[in-house]
Image 1 (cartoon, helix red, strand yellow):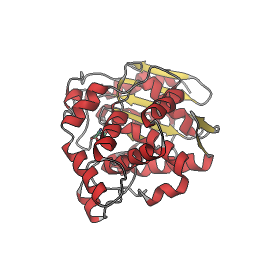
Image 2 (spheres, protein in one colour):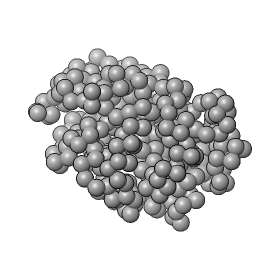
Image 3 (cartoon, rainbow, N blue to C red):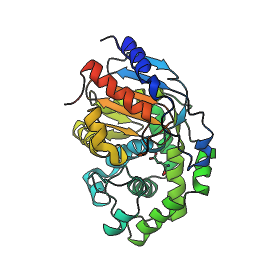
Length: 303
Ligand code: GLU
């Protein structure tokens, strides 16, 4: 398969969408990002990498970080984890309070904010150095020691993170989180603030293609667990647009409001795409389109 050519052609086809959508600006530090950027990188399990344009520019991975947090929590807690957080699609916005209230403080899934705030609480309770372990884990996954939190973005989100603070308070009220709310939120915002490039994300996510044993910085997952993580990405990875992403692209994956999307073709490759302009559901407009064209051109999807 000539992925280089396919990536080039995809870019030409999505150019008419380059001014559609708006970058996230509810986190003031993200509003400063130039919205007119695009990068893509596909990495196969055999180690080949194919990239296009700004594949090496780092950006705020935001919710994509929730996949890393879930992997760590599953490694630490196993199936017990699902007592604290569900694994059903939410069908509501990623930061919705309503469902959490109705369902008495048990988040629908680990990829909505409430779910990831619970994951943050679990990591704080289970690890002596949660920040250090998190960084060690993601650095080993993407094989780059310089990947880090962006504290300007984390603090910027903290300063106006009223909705996430409300979610954390509701979780605390229902006894779903154990630690101090401020500590949990700050750890959550730090995880979201991590900056990675498409190449680094593609490298990190090849670990979730399930083609070899998963063991990074001491966090181990069986093939069966990786299969289940992919299932959660497929059903819950795209806010309340998971059905649309499944329909258009047909791969498990995860998006973030920084404009990044990562998708996995199990046993074959991971692909990351980034473009900051988002649609009304919070997914990158050009990113969704690029992945739709990729699986259409290659006929490679799980369906
Ligand atoms: N840090 C962001 C928030 O909590 C993550 C949102 C996202 O990427 O979906 O609002």
